[in-house]
Length: 99
Image (tube, rainbow, N blue to C red; front, side, top):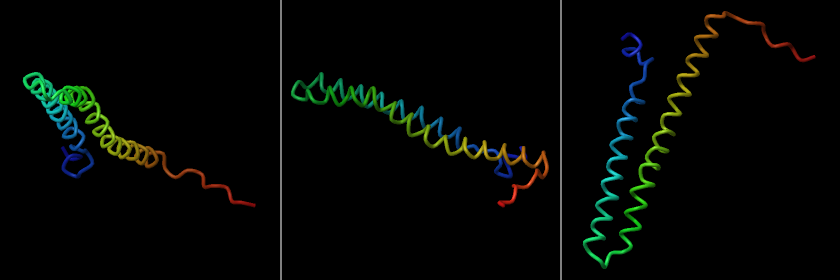
């Protein structure tokens, strides 16, 4: 709880995962609505293709976007782990001087 209160534990990755599922569900519903709308109105054949694109590529695009956001938080976690590792090891040898 202390890590959470001092902002060392991030809650945003969990929120991003929730937003992914909401975004994927919206893409699937929008794609299905477009396909069914095109089926009801025969003059809208291009809606079938657009609906299929949204249905299949929409969740993929949402996933890629969310993964890009998550990468920033993973980088932060890894850097924090490295910082703690260096602090536990103590000062190491200094860099050799250039001759």
